[in-house]
Amino acid sequence: MLLRILAVNVLALAILVGGSLYLGRYQQSLITAELDALTVQARIFAGALAEGALFFGQGNRDQLSPELARDMMRRLVEITKARTRLFDPGGRLIADSRDLAGSAEMIQVEPLPPPEAPSPVAGLLEWAYDRVIDWLPGRSGLAVYTERAAQRAEHYPDVRVAMTGEASASVRSTGARAIVLEAAVPVQRLRHVLGTVYMSRPGDDIDQALRSVRLDIIRVFGVALAVTVFLSLYLFGTIARPVRLLAEAAERVRRAQGRQHVIPDFSHRHDEIGDLSVALGEMTASLWSRMMAIERFAADVAHEIKNPLSSLASAVETVTKVSDTERRDRLIAVIQDDVRRLDRLITDISGYSRLDAELSRIEPEPVDLADLLRALLDLHQTAHPLDDPGQPTITLDADESRSLVVHGVGDRLFQVFQNLLANAVSFAPAGSTVRLGVVHEGNEIVATVSDDGPGIPPDKCEAIFDRFYSERPASEKFGTHSGLGLSISRQIVEAAGGTITATNRTDGSGRVVGATFTVRLPAP
Image (cartoon, rainbow, N blue to C red; front, side, top):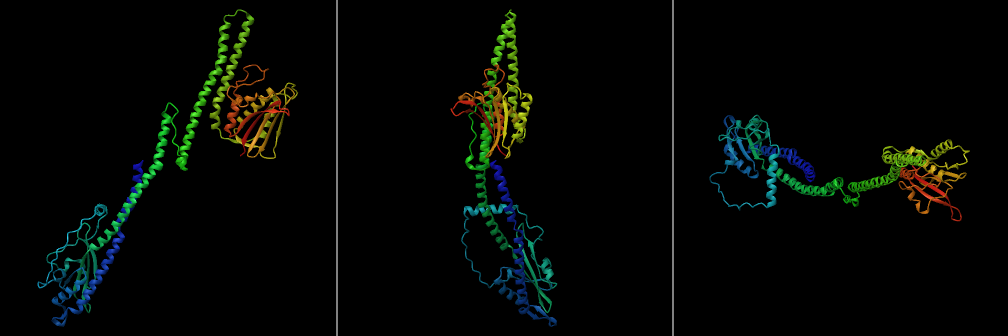
């Protein structure tokens, strides 16, 4: 990952710097400026020669004097670095600034100091510059500058143009990257071409200017490269490395047999990596919790099924040995009860195990609790006529001055209140009242189911929601209920984001007069 980050960041920077080093337009502007300056110098030379280096020749016509022209050129070239050559109208070279120093001239020789050795940094920059410049496109399309031993005007295209009376300037190549700037201007007198001034100058100044700019770019690139590498390392340390640690921790959790592995905590970062670590930590904790719940559920199921199986095995073993018909019939009845109890347990356990997956799969929908409780009341009254003396009276008090709509799975919420109502009816004395109520309190919808029964043992108000816990009336036959009803109800309510609790109702003297189950669900 570190190499990928470095490659992406450095490659983009290298492309940008490589494009900057080309400097095509800047180079062309320098060449144009130098050619203009060289042309101006050539015009000055040509004007000076046309005024001061002429004589009347045959036919009383103006002609260039080679001797006067050489003397004037010797003085003029002292102020310029350009090489200057003068051609006569016939194309013959009559003066060259490179050969103008006479034999009588004194030449003073002074030894120069040895060149300074560049510093390591400068040497590295020079080396980098040469390597980079070698990758850049060369100056293609330029005519090659050649110089013959016997020079004539026709050897130089610009001179040939100047012989016609027009100034000309161009750039020519002397090697892979070296160039020569050329300018040719006619020496004219009354529009009569008397000769041509041809000036040339190597493009060293241009190359030096480009070199200076490019070295500055390389220096900036070096600093930018160092910053890019540092930021890439920082990026790797703050993003890629934590992600890798989280991935390794998740892999250890997947492969591990035990549960001691912990997801690294980056919550202090307050960014996406921190959110990811928190989410993975919570997911892992939820996974372990779910696995432990499955293990406990499996243990509880095994325990609950073992009791009727033991009773069934004992009755089956005994019935084969009993000859008395009456005792045999009682044992057969026991066997039938145990079979029905096992069937009820297996059915309830199957529904309980599928409930969690079903709740996670079904999208919640708006459910009006007032309408749900009215439908439940109608269903109960249809199944149990009002004139049944053994049944309590059921009332509904719904405060519909505010919305009583919640989000949840309607069928499952109906199952919750159906179970609570069935429990209340089973504990309520004949002729008493079971009260259903629903109100809007703050940000919650609160529904209650109250009865006038014996209440709940004081220390069992929470335990009654445990799996397979059963607290039934003494008159009810043992094994009629599996003890999963309230546990399923709590699971459904908590999946909807709510809570379910059980409390005892008391009178003024503190005597228990019934029980109340309260379901609180968040209002949308």
